Length: 132
Length: 178
Image (tube, rainbow over all chains, first blue to last red; front, top):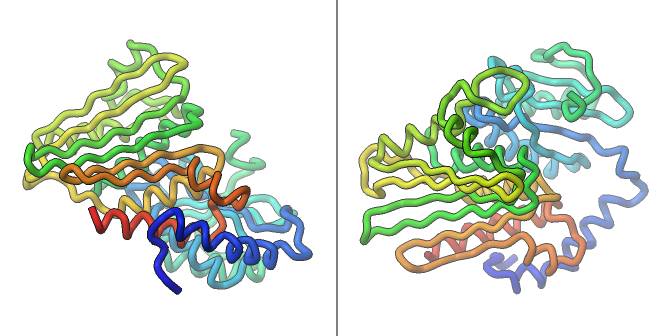
């Protein structure tokens, strides 16, 4: 595959993008996606939230897991940054603290794939960060 | 915070919280004038002038989860350490502009870092916000505008993994050529 260097190159790949999207959406409704929010305030960024977020986006794609990774502000757990919130379909969101790439890998393999809880959960009761 | 790119990611976060729909990020590297300047400009809700005077104080923050805000003070410090300064202009309901200047060759100037990664992360994590990124190096410039890309891709979301990868490649190769 040639390198994408300009908007024209990007345009040429449009059909390729489109077919990938259709392949992914086949038989799946958007609510069945895994939703991940990475806390990205000063505290998170300084502790490496960017690296973790890039790792998540890349690895979830590689492991063919349909997920949306977005960012959010400070959740108030600055001592435990980087923190991420993972919401599996039809389940309450769970917040994990001290997430580096190794932890993120464990979360993908155990929690996202099998629903198995892993260490590092920050206990709390709320619906989602945005409602706080 | 050890890279300027991470400061940009952090300052842009303020623009996102301010409800901006368009965020302009600009970096100019001028070797002749020995100057580096970075701007983050948004069309968010802005701040009244008394707030602008207080934002450099780490005990000023708009967040509700705790009482300190270190983003701008940290960048202010990074600027001063490299013989530069930080200026903030803001108008209520119009937006805010943060301008950081540094001496390009100063030994304490932080490295630029992974600016491509930061831009990619910003637009992929905030699909409803448009970003314009312009980078000028010694008179040569590159401009990346998510509005242009969105129009070109006709409805394909920019945060599709394949699209993210291609755009990252495009920005990186253009920056290399500057």
